[in-house]
Length: 367
Image (tube, rainbow, N blue to C red; front, top):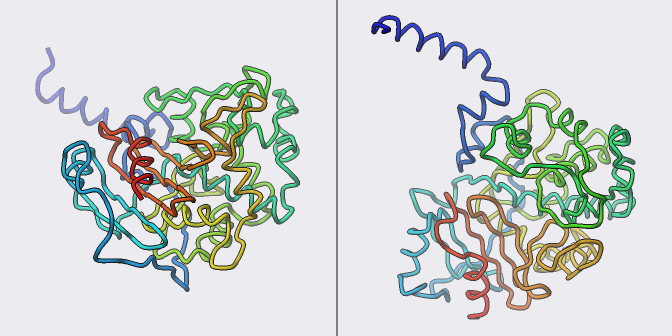
C-alpha cells in the first residue's frame, strides 16, 4: 500500500504530466470536459470591434409578452429552464428583455452552432461580391487537397444543405469523436485534409458540424489576405451597428482558422441584429448588406437532392415558409418570424426541459 508521501508524489507527477501535454486535444478535452458557456475564455480568438455607429432597438415600458407560460410566471419559467438572456423584439421595439443567473446585457455568451447561420450569411456576401462563383461550385476549387479523398462532386450547396455525405461523428462527449476533435483540436486544416466521404453527395441530410467547417475553409480561401473575422467585421459587425466588442474562437494562436461551426462570442442584443437583417431580407436601413436573393434562398422550402423541410442553408425552419432560426447547443437561439415582425433571442446555460421551437412559434403567433 502506498503511503501518504508516495501518493502525494504520484499526484504531483500526474499533474506535471497533464500540464506537459496540455496543448494537445485530449488534454484539452480532459481539462475542459463538455461545452460550457464560459468556453470563449478557453480558446484563442480574433477580435470584433464595436461599431462606431451603433444601432439601438427602441424600448417601451408597456411591452407585450405573456405573463405565464405553462401555468408558471414567465420570468420564473425562463429561469427554471436555465435561461441566461431572453429578448422579444417586435417592430424594432424590445417587448421583453430579461437576464438571469447573474447575467446582464453586457455578458458574453458563445453562439455555439448559431455561428453556422452567420457563416452562411458570409458565404452569401462572398457570392454577392464574386469572391465565390456560385453554390454549384465543387469545394475542391477551394480545397484541392480533398481531390485525393474523392470530394470532386461535393458542392458548396451540399455543405450548406448538410447533404455532402461526409463521414463525421457529431459527438462532443467522445474525446476522439470528430466534433470534439474539431472543437478542442489545434489544427483544423490538418483535420480537414483527413476527411472522408461515407455516401454519395446529394442523397441524404445529416446534420454534422464538419460541413460548416468546410464552408469556413472555402470562405477563408476566397478572401485572400483577410481573415474570416475581418470579413465579418466588414460585412456585418460594423454596418449592423453592433453595440459591443466580440470574438470568434480559432483553433490556434498562430495562423489560426475560425471555428465556423461554432464559437462566435457576443451579446444578446447584437445576436438580435443578425435576426433583424434577415427579417428585413438582407436590407439594413436602406443598405443591402447581403442580397435579397440569398436570404430567400437561405430560408425557402427545398426538398431536392436529399434536403429536408426543416433545414435550409444552415438555418432551421420550425414552420417552413413562415419562420426560421439559428440554433446552438445549450439552447442558444435567434428566432425570426418576418410576417409578425418578431425576433426572439434566447441564450442559455443549457436547454432546460423546455421545447423552445414550440415556445417561439407560440409567442410569435400571439402577436
